[in-house]
Structure formats: C-alpha cells, structure tokens
Image (cartoon, rainbow, N blue to C red):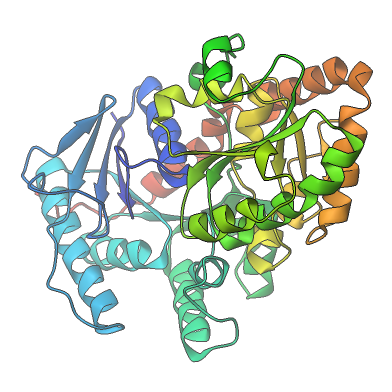
Length: 411
C-alpha cells in the first residue's frame, strides 16, 4: 500500500480554502486505498497538547502536529520553523515509514520536507497553491519589490528546482515557473476542485434563517462567503450597492465570514446610503455554510487585480457553481481559468464599483437565463473540477517518483 505523508502549514479543524483542499485531496486518496496522513508546522492554530505520537484525528483523517517554538524575530523565526518541522517529519518518517513526502506551500514546508527527503532517500513532490511572496502582498504583510519579496521568491525557485516533482493549482502558476527556468515536464497542474459529497446536494432555501436575517421572499440576494482580505475587493462590492439598489430596489448584500478587513468594511457599510441593505453575518461553522448559500441568488467575487489574483485560482466560485448558484467575478487571470463569461458566469472589470453594479443589475434583470447558466456551471464542476477525478493527475507522478526511489533509510 502506498503511504503518503502530506506536509502542511495548517489543517483541519481550522477552516480555510487551504484546509478544505487538503481534506478533499486526502479523502480522495484514502478512498483509492492509499494510506495518508498529514503533519503540520508550528503555525497550526490551537494545536495545544496534540503533538503526541498518536496525532489528532479530524473527520477521519490523521494529522501530526509540530511542537511550538519560542518567539523570535524574522528571519530567524522562519529558519527555526523549518528546523522544527523537519525534525517532526524525520521522526514520522522513521515511525510511519511513508513512501513519499507531498509538501504543500508555503515554501517553508517544502524546505523542511526536502531537508528530510534528501537525507533519507524519500522523493518529494512540492505542491504550490500560491507563491508566498505574492500572498504576503495580497494580505498586506509584505511589499512587492522589497528585499524580503525577492528573497522569498529566490527560496521558492530553489525549492521548486530541488523537488523531485512539482504540482500547481492553475496554469498561471505553471507559466510563472516555466518563465523562471523550471522544466515544464516537471510540473503538473492539479486544479482546485469541489468535493461533491460536501457541496453536491444543495439544500432548499432556509426560510427560517432568511427571516432571522430580514430577507424577504422577493429580495434579490448578492452574497460573498469567504475571508475578508483586502485583495478580495469586498470594499468595491459595498461601494457598488447604491447604484445596484437604484437599478434593482430589492437587491440585498449578505457578507458571510471575517478577517483582517472586517472592521473597515463594517465602517464603510455603515456610512453607505444603503446601509440597511447590507448584512454582515460573521464566521459560521462549515457545517452550516450551505444554509447561507441557499439564501443567495448571485455569489460575487470582486477580487482586485494584482499578481496574486492573476496567477491563482480561488476555490469559492467552484463551490458556488456546485451549489447551483450564479457567479459574478472580476475579470482577473485566476477567475478566467474558472469562469467562461456568459456561459458559466459573468465577468466584470476589476477595481470598478460601477462595473460591478452594472454586471449584477444585468444578471438580476435576466432571470430567464438563470436556469441554463446554473446547469452549465454545475456540469463544468462535475466534469472538470470534481476531486474524485482530479486525484488521477497525481497517480502517474507518484508512480514515477516511487519507481526511482532510493533505498529507504527510515528503518
């Protein structure tokens, strides 16, 4: 039986697009008969005392935790994180004896996995979901063209070239790596997908929840469900509401989630002339998210235009399509890989509240097109973005790496 150890920044029970992709991947691999486990670094939230030999079981999956380290300034902190994670990986390699290390971004995880893999003769596949330097710019913790940005970029390139194989989630990331001189034959694209066991059976409209939120049967509900980062462009969506309300008086905006921009967005909404049409729900348990999906007519994703959003495909639009919802999104590279304008969704100009309002008003005014749009989008997810089929992209890469594996030193 093939044994795969996933090296992760964080995992369930924490909730994020990162952890849900990991869950879907590991569940699909386990269903195929492979033995899978995960190990998380020191950034795993609330690991507490769960760093023992037995790990932590969440949703039927086993995750091993790395003990925390003493606080210290960057960049010493990052090097110590790598060392702590590498030590934990090595102990697990000797105890659990995986055949392959599947490291997931950020690059710190890859560097820790490579340190152990090269020493013990275990192949390493490095999967990149976003470049760490661009993610830092997107969430406001870094600056493009800074010394730290270029240092991180250099480490990323070095890790990619050292790994035995590389997986990326979209063509944008693949093209960027090829431009850095990485052999295209070394890279596979494993796109974001949807676990249809979770999102494949949309529930009926939750009338009781709608009543609690003050949403009437005739309201047209625009929604955003996700993390409130600046690059998501939620402020542009709020800014679009006065014009949208003028064109569609029953339009309402439902914002589900939280994050660094939450306070600023609430202040912006409170100052809006249509503040009474904007509702913040806060974070909700993942098991309850589908109830909020059931109330929304159009899921809006107004991401700002930047390297991060041009290169990286998000997961949320696919979940919305699987739920049978209409999708409207900014015309950035990551969205264009998922959405065909006029067929599976609607694209509008990024960073432009007027364009958002016009696109949403146009959709609300053509309800005769909704059923066909929903069916087309759902079929796209079932055919091209279903995790049960996406997993097949890994199998030939795993087989190639294991065929050339050096004799194990794990015993």
